[in-house]
Structure formats: C-alpha cells, structure tokens
Length: 102
Image (cartoon, rainbow, N blue to C red; front, top):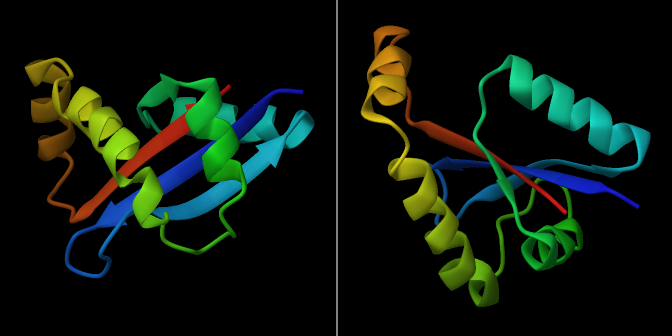
C-alpha cells in the first residue's frame, strides 16, 4: 500500500526534521495532493518512507535516519535555481518542507 510522509525542518527550532504528516492509501494520496498544490518537493524512496512512517507524528527523525535524510536534503537544495528564487519572492521562511513516498 502506498505511503507518504511529510517532513518540516526549522533549524531555529529543531535539531532534526520533524514528521508533520504521514499516511497510507487514501490518506497518502491526500498528502501527495496537498504537497503538490503547495509546491513541496517530492522524493521517492521506499525504504526511507517506510522508516519515516514509523516515526510518531510531531517527532523529530531519529539519529539513525540523519545520513539518508541529509542525502535527500542535498537533493532538495540542488533543485533548479529558478524555483528557489521564485520561492524566495514569496517571502523569507525558516522552514524547509519535503515529502517522501514509496
């Protein structure tokens, strides 16, 4: 069954990314829909999605997931410069958001 997990990271508040949404089946589809509408980067990684799905809602990811999640953050940071500049025009934010699905 399809799963989706959304993370948010605010370096001013958190030591690590925090799980802000998780679901499977229809709920996963709804999370994906909202993420797409909000232009949240999507990263497909079945094993990471499974591991993040086990993290309680509202909790920061555990240290054993830091390395793999850091690789994903590198992906998000490497997005097209135009997309980053467009997002900056909307105003400054300390929050980074990303979504994982399997």
